[in-house]
Length: 227
Image 1 (tube, rainbow, N blue to C red):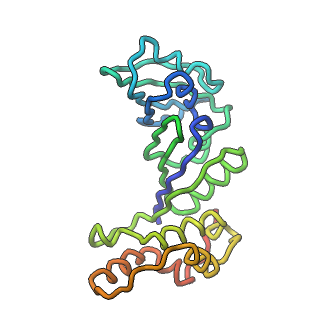
Image 2: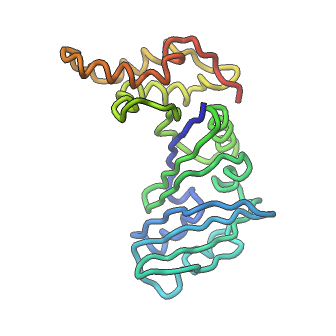
Image 3: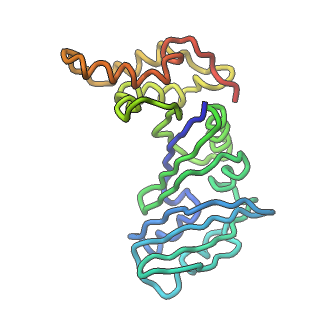
């Protein structure tokens, strides 16, 4: 089942993060990522500044082989970078694992990026490779792309979302699994606020439907996916 995940990483740990040393108030948004021979080529927007030489804000990074201004509109700049594949970071891990990048946005606080895998094992491979390279990524969201009847049914409660993220972080979806599901559910529930009584039937049903894509997991019938 196709799965999307959201990760965060400290701003100085993500590629292109050196821009915040000179331009701390800008926002950087990755437009697209193109793997090429010996390099990864990201196109990205820098927004929130007006400078004469935007390229110089990035050239200090050891992973940058070349950078070029493609276009600019007022305080927005579109740049093209040639990024060295032999420099270990998130961009090279994305290219190596071939996990599609949906979006990445950076500020001087942190980077947030979304990726998509054909199934959970793709996400597990990406995260494991980051750990091997000591890249400090933190998983914040994990959800399956499953058709639902309404927008309400697509929502998980805070407790359900926390349980899924906790299971992923503790290796439930790895092979062999490093954790069992039921203790994780109890662990998550113990740290969550009590839900309001389901006295209104119309509010109880959407929560039940929202959990439907994950019912095989929560019922303990789904075996961990091989990574």
